[in-house]
Amino acid sequence: DTAVSQTPKYLVTQMGNDKSIKCEQNLGHDTMYWYKQDSKKFLKIMFSYNNKELIINETVPNRFSPKSPDKAHLNLHINSLELGDSAVYFCASRQGQPPYYTDTQYFGPGTRLTVL
Amino acid sequence: RKEVEQDPGPFNVPEGATVAFNCTYSNSASQSFFWYRQDCRKEPKLLMSVYSSGNEDGRFTAQLNRASQYISLLIRDSKLSDSATYLCVVNMDTGRRALTFGSGTRLQVQP
Image (tube, rainbow over all chains, first blue to last red; front, side, top):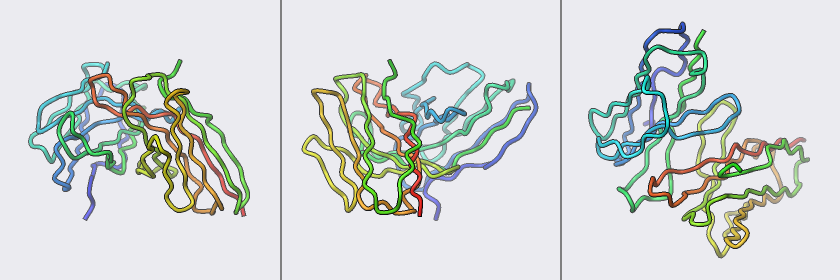
């Protein structure tokens, strides 16, 4: 029944490794997002996809690559992980297409990434 | 200046107290405004939208002052279950249509 799900919930890995986080929403929403919440608790947008099309790409290192195989899925692949990548990564979805969004974004439970 | 600025708190209040949080935003062209709630180690969830005329949802009242670029959230009769971080969120009309989050104000309601 989970509206927005992410896997894995926890990810502990060594510097230099490559890892992926998966996100799925069963709400039928058109738009999906990746956010990063760092240790200072700031939630910052990284990417947004609308119907598999990239519409927002913030200043994020190109080691981060989102992939949207269909509008219900948005995965995040991270190459050559660094210590500073340690954070909680949240996926979210929202109904509507630009510029006619609904107000509410629904967030997944988060993936806590720790890079050692 | 941060795009969305909040007092980080924590606000420690007794049960039954009234508490108010404030938030300022930098972009005067911002279109829509929200309060989200985030419990410890959980995802943010929409608490309420904020409208120019002010709006109320039970014990929660939100106000918007566009001239001062200021948003507030008032919680009356605080419950233990209100303990959480409250995030001020703004949809800035920058063409990106993305939400900008404040860093949150932590509330701890004590018995």
